[in-house]
Image 1 (cartoon, rainbow, N blue to C red):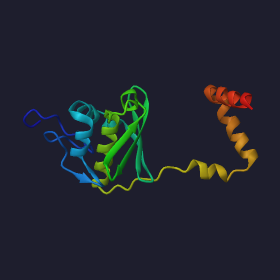
Image 2 (cartoon, rainbow, N blue to C red):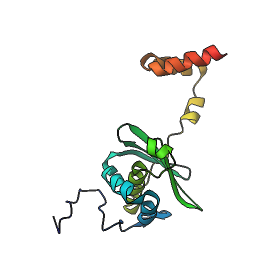
Image 3 (cartoon, one colour):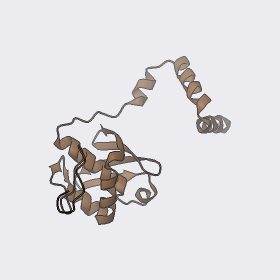
Amino acid sequence: MVGGDPPRQPGVPQRCGKVFDSHVAGFSTDDVLALAGDKSFDRGVEYIQAVTDLETEGDAVCATVQGNDLYEVELYVGPAGLSGSCDCPWGKEGNFCKHCVAVALVYEYDRDNGRILPRRFDLRSCLELLDHGELVGLLMEVADIDRDLRRRLRERIEQR
């Protein structure tokens, strides 16, 4: 430890004062800090290791973050700058939450280190290639182990 700083974890960007020293793909860590505020930013740094399934979908960066639950995060960079959405309670209120911060920082780090992100799997296109029998079989297989899906299917059928 140098001067009371926490030890560096391999592969994890570390804070230098208030910001990371990088600017990648349309937004900087300063932008992330400005959107999130100090508290969410600091908490987001703690969630870097919890980011999984980082991928792109069009102009969006998508990932899953393990918090109290699994949260889905999407980040967008457009003419108005960086924005994000998360299905956690704080994110649902329109805030750039700690989960958004973690995804933004991991994305920046990966891009800065030359990692090419995979594209999100296009499930709809793949399912459209299956014939009716294969789709029914697949749906039955999943419904046998997913009670919520069975309930949703039953409700949909009863609405007809």
